[in-house]
Image (cartoon, rainbow, N blue to C red; front, side):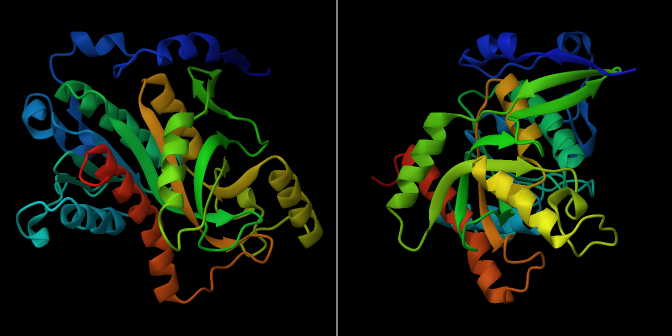
Length: 313
């Protein structure tokens, strides 16, 4: 029997225009305690308002080490007192995610793929809700495979699309398929693009990001343990993606965009490309070059945060 397709875009769009964070779960109000299990935090064991009430920016990325490095980088960029070596992992009691707080910036790892980032987002959004945060901006920073653009290009996502190039995320709930919009905040994307244009040696484009459920076959790679298609079929598919406006491929953007939109959170996806997928599948770029590439989204987001905070003109 075919799954029931339920389109939530109309009502969700109306809710999205509300200015404040909106957690869409009526059951939370009746819970005596909310345990954020994968963060090792809870509403009874921690004073979340004291710990996180001043958060204005949440930056998320796949790697725990990378998000720790980003936290140290932001500590220096914001001119905060203290030694960066003293920045500790708030979630050190669990091995699922890492979380670091530097001033009004929260830096969190989300692992790889839609399921991993989805779990993190549920608990992170509830964390912001319990802490009473408002006017929070979320940005995913990371790496990706480029589609028809040079390695090292930073892609600011305007729409996250699925493998059929549709701007939607399908969530199966109790045997029903819910379709959710994955459009991101246009003004935020344009603001980031404007700041990027002011920075030297930061090639940047705004385009669609394709989110897949797999790194190998799902992204048309020829180098996995399994491959059921030819080089010509791969290139034809990538050509269709490029013509549809796709400029990079990763594995988290659709659920990130959908959940942020549903909860009225302004969000952006800023990923650097490590290779052009038309030219190959394996990443053979020297390590020191990759490190510099990975710093590019962080530099842009740091510039954005400092401008928003009024630290620079």
